Image 1 (cartoon, rainbow, N blue to C red):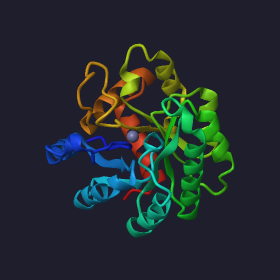
Image 2 (spheres, rainbow, N blue to C red):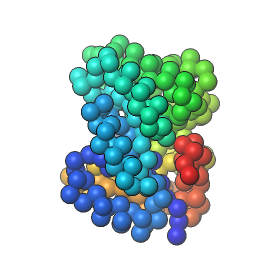
Image 3 (cartoon, rainbow, N blue to C red):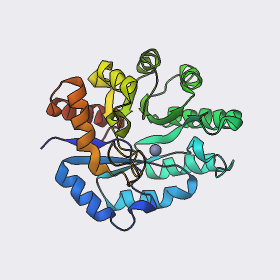
Amino acid sequence: MMPLIDSHCHLDFNAFDHDREQVLDHCKALGLTHIIVPGVTRDSWPALMNHCAQHEMMRPALGLHPMFMQSHQDSDLDALEQAIENHMPVAIGEIGLDFFLNGHDKEAQTALFEAQIQLAITFELPVILHVRKAHDEVLKVLRQARGLKGGIVHAFNGSMQQAEFYMQQGFLFGVGGAVTYPRAQKLQRLFCDLPLTSIVLETDAPDMPLAGHQGERNSPEMIPQVLEKLAELRDESAELIAETTSNNCRKLLELV
Ligand SMILES: [Zn+2]
């Protein structure tokens, strides 16, 4: 069976409370070896850590998401530092800048992002990035982040030039349901052109449903379909893509 990893999945969210066990069993049957679960707010960390402690397959990242600025408090950064020390997550995430919805709080987002990048450097952990309408601003922060271990740009939808800058900083690119839409030609071209050694698969479930599944809950069970689409687009075997993307993810996050 092909080894598969969902590098970005909110399996801790309530949307999975009634059938998380079944979803995990099905994922195992499909060949998934790991599901990376990024944290979004301080309140979400305890349940997330609990699920990960119960299920070997689920691996935690901890962070303060830029789309939830209203939920974050100053003391959350200290709490994050403590939580990292106590729980040793595989990454800091998801963190970043979202200037699509929250353009009004750019300064606060940037300060929070920079502080979490510093924590990543201190703890020698990679980061999982959420970036919308802010790639140049994020790259500016990354260029000043000496000693950062790299990370994953989740749901990457930037330009090839921006991708090259990220690669220079040791970043991989997450591809998910968005690439399955016929209208996503620019994104499809980008993921044809990127080197396979820089790509990881993701679902962002329960969000970002695949084409044909609009309005449904997305699930890590859809990873094989993301894989299939990428194989078709790149004209490479599913086996090669599964093997390489899983290796990329395992290496960066030091998964065992
Ligand atoms: Zn996410």
